[in-house]
Image (cartoon, rainbow, N blue to C red; front, side):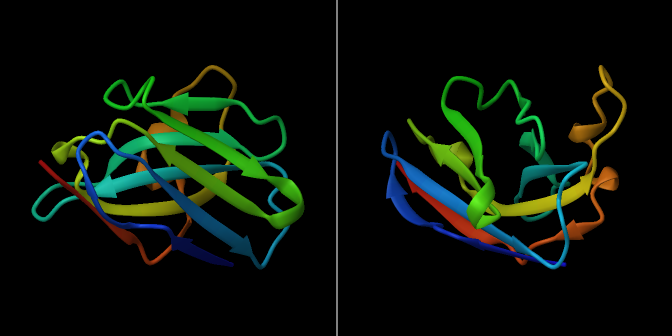
Amino acid sequence: VQLVESGGGLVQAGFSLRLSCAASGRTFNGYTMGWFRQTQGHEREFIAAITWGGGSTFYADSVKGRFTISRELPKNTVYLQMNSLKPEDTAVYYCAAGLTGPYGSDYYRSPDEYADWGQGTQVTVSS
């Protein structure tokens, strides 16, 4: 399995970026795709997730209303549209894939539920 993120960069506060995660190496039906971020000295933080088959979406409170996760099945690609960026959004952003957990549970929030990870892409938001 290979997950390759792209789209990171330097942007001013208030502007937007779109991250992409190109997935390959397996069929992802039955999987959840997640976006996490991490800053130095801190644990990986859940940002958003989407179930590959049904397209159900989940968000951290810190990004709800600003970030949108989506997937494009023919391209095996997951996107994270990030609007109204803030300096505190600065981090390395990771794409991850893991088996979809029980309905109604919050399995998608835990990095431990994801077996496969991309290499990460840096997002820097200047004030």
